Amino acid sequence: MEAAKQWQQAELHYQQALKLDPGSQSAWIAIGRLAERFGDEETAQQCFEQLVALAPDNAPGHFSLGNIHAKKYDFEAAGQAYRRALELDPSLAGAWCNLGNVEKYLGQFADAQRSYRRAISSTTEPAQRAKQHSNLLLSLHYDGSLSHAAVYQEHRDWADQHARALYPASPSWPNHLDADRRLNIGYVSGGFYESPILAYFLSNVLAHHDKSGFFITAYSSSRAPENPVAALRKNADAWVDIAHLDDDAAAEKIRRDVIDILIDLDGHGPTGRPLIFARKPAPLQVEWLDWFNTSGMDTIDYFLTDPYTTPPDSPQRFSEQPIPLPHCRLCYSPVGSAPPVAPMPALTGAPFTYGSFNRQDKFSPEVLRGWAGILHAVPDSRLLLKNRALQITAVKAWVEKNFARLGIPAERLVLRGPSTHVDMLKQYGDVDVALDTFPYNGGLTTCECLWMGVPIVAIEAERVIGRQTSAMLRLLGLDEWVASSTDDYVRLAVEKSRQQEAVAALRGSLRQRFEQSPLCDAPRFARDLERVYRSMWQRYCAVAGGSS
Image (cartoon, rainbow, N blue to C red; front, side, top):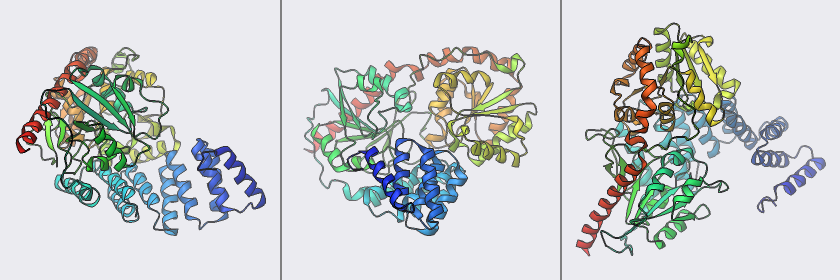
């Protein structure tokens, strides 16, 4: 019945099983997982707690309980449950992976990488093993201690282990070699449904594509197809659901559609399907948008970037050829319902307030030390942090405990959980100066912060993900807000607290400056993107035509 998705009938059967045998471990875990699937996490937790009380050696029960704790952002309880599950069954790949997620959230990067590696070695199914390895790749971007060579090599190792055997030996495509014809462009993502990244960075681009020169197909690999982002679906010429197809079938579908240039929007992220691209279903393949490093594969030809994010002397390495857009690799679509920019709170009598609305997992130990250094240097200031995890008492306690270790009392912290999007934007009115995270920068968060008139201090690191915010600031002519190191970051943030009139003046003009910049010019961005696509295709036609 579960296979037929008759969940309620299945639950009744399991409840009947419990009446007959209250100690049935399989029934307790089945009801818990059904409740979890329905979104009833309280019932699920009760079931899993009952299960491990009845059977303390039931590893799946501890694993499932850990998952509930993790969903509630109770990282310490989740970690304890996963470790207990792994003591009982070290082969539980999912528990190793989720333990890695928890350790990453807690800033324990070396431990997280070890856990991800155990997940990889404990997984036998090839596609799932590749997915576990992609989780490791994503985690590396939170760890600023790793060398460029090490990060690059890990991506190449991924390709060698999971993708190389899938590379076509003698690839050929039926695409007509006409350099100036209408091009078939395919975008692949699992985020075409309810993804804020695609909603704010792709929908405006699709709306301004020249449909006479480019036919746009969106290949959606989302497992939750109920709520497509309306602007994405409306502005694609064709919408193809590939979630039900395995990688081989999806690649064959794309090949039959005769796509000229196929763009991977997800890379090794949570919704990525990189093994589709390993099969080279299109003559040209490109990495862009929500992945910020190399794919590691020889079958992806280009990495779309910009001069600020990947300068010519960048030490970051790519298996693809980096190809720059003229201004920025991102183009933001502002929120129409955003409230007006609020006055600078410090000038209305409030304490000088720094703020970050970034995700909790970006709060690395180095970030927390930097923020504590700023608060120590500006004694009357406070720090406002807002994200989804901070609705949880245990997460707030974790943040307060870590700042206390750094000499910052809880009363200097303002910790806020989630709210409606409009209310979240309004709360930027409580922030004087924003602080970016590093080495994993904000992206959409940075854009929303700047749109709400709040300038942001950022470090310009060396990798794409560590240069997102500094690239935007430089494009806006705000070079003086870009730091070169953690010490410089602290110095700049402290300095801005002493320049309140200048910061207030910038606040009053920042939205207009942003709106008039290339960061918000979707028509120009689309033309720039199309010129890059056209140049790629013309180059391909010249080479392929000459070799035929």
